[in-house]
Image (tube, rainbow, N blue to C red; front, side, top):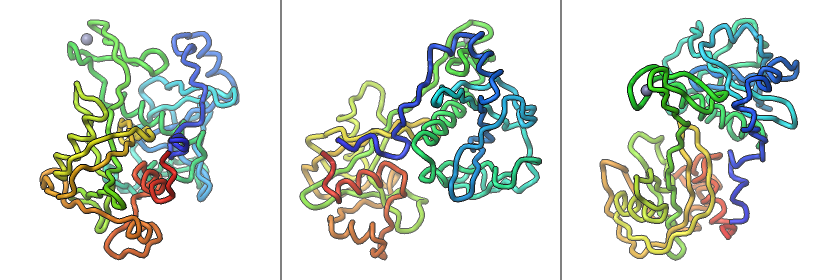
Length: 321
Ligand SMILES: [Zn+2]
């Protein structure tokens, strides 16, 4: 697919400078440079600046906010030569109410005392389409690797405490010395078509009228193609023949790699698995155009920024090739 990398979080060619991760002297030098920026994260939410023209709110290495951090900064790379790091400050307890913190879409924003008024911790889902491709890449990688550290404080081999190493790109066990590497979970998401129609489904608990492409985790020992066929059949009862890869999207909620594919349906009868999805339907191209135009009272368009929206839009525009 020619437009594959234009998807949200599709990347901006950031120089991750991985050769510096094990070079303590070079990292210390970068951390001492006045233009180096560190992005604070709080419970997976990046510090964002600029209402309406959102961007990461980079802070100086020695900003007092980092007194709340209990691990080292993670090195993200060089943004046109300027070093970028991120650092978790989840120990901080803000004054605001936190009821919505771990909901699907957390609308709350937290303001750190003493920071400019427009700087706040904000849910990435809410602002992801406002960021430039470079900022989106930096924030996505920071969120994904930060989430990994958050739940990997102990060694998967022996259970002892592990500690951050390689500027955040590994954890090392303090007892058995095993090295652990950041994980990415592969997910297939598929545009299943039959003639002029596309297969859409909805999960229980989604906002009313919201439908999206079917998706599911790739299982151990499975190819992408086999996962597309198995997940589609399990969820909808529809048999799929040829499968083509279209585009991929890192999706840091918390650690997925969405692999967008097109699958050609061999059957059309739908039998849903109610434990996985609530409904599945065939939607014609004309109905989908009305949905994208906001004129379909029965269905809402897929969320902008998500790869499902991207795949459906390119299907409507006939630009999947
Ligand atoms: Zn261990």
